[in-house]
Length: 377
Ligand SMILES: *Cc1c(COP(=O)(O)O)cnc(C)c1O
Image 1 (cartoon, rainbow, N blue to C red):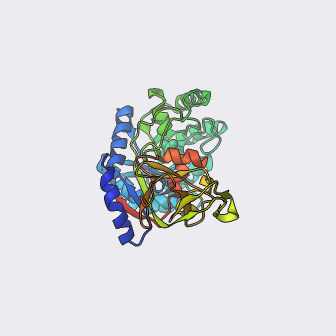
Image 2: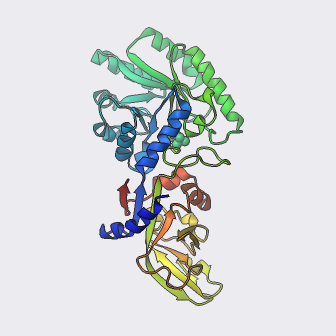
Image 3: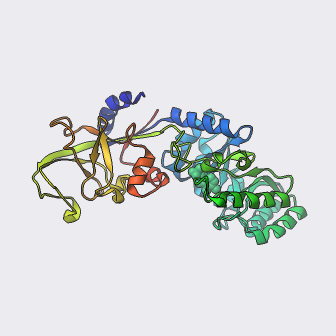
């Protein structure tokens, strides 16, 4: 790995910038992940889901890098994300809004050349009304609920949607789509149930292309690929499928500075609430990241960081801006004030940290704070 390059340079860069930690986003690894997914789903196309600021990694940087790799389709969740991303990308990139539009946002959406995902008959009617008043066809994606009960046109409204589309050609449908609820769990029967329901949708809307797979769906096989896959987490290095080795490359590294070290006797209380009591003489270090930086409080007395490959357990409660670790496993003086410890990197993946925190990788990535020095490679 080329991690040593980062290890030798990151501390100085971070500290020079005034930050106490260094968040490195490897755009080359991101692009290799994109290529890997694109190869699996070809000849179907591979979009990129860049909602929530590309899962915390920077929607503009991530989208531009993937555009350079050939990606032309980008999904955000909220309309405001599309408004912010639109000027960052070339005109031949298409931006889709998964949550659709709130009443009143239609004109701005049409104006911005942004494509809404229509989730209800109401939204379809409003979008059609606008198309008629502008006297031009407007693009859209139709999302159907195939069993998740979250977003999308429910089964009982399909007939009315079909009637609406037959009566008017105001809307230019890119494709119809649905979202899988259990795609990370290969053995879950909900996947086959949703696929069967998606096939019923396709039969009721003949002639339209289908988009179905998120990251997990890509690994469920060709039946789930349709014409366009919509991966998010797998692009960013997270595991798409639980219980199997993750084939994706890590994209994020996080190193955080030690701001103080100390040696305490047996029986010392560590952190808020005195929740941790040392069982013997213990060497401790306090690092400059806490729950406000995305180290979840649920890592209290559970998670760990690494230094030179050695696991250093978190002791006591994670604070807002700092976290205390037990460095007794290191030889005395190996780590000192200003040293950088690895939170995410060669020894700890985003899924490892999520497991310790009893969260999912998505929550870890989207929570990584803005007090670190961010560098894109
Ligand atoms: C978030 C989202 C995705 C991407 O999901 P991942 O599991 O991160 O790949 C795809 N489609 C829809 C509708 C989503 O909401």
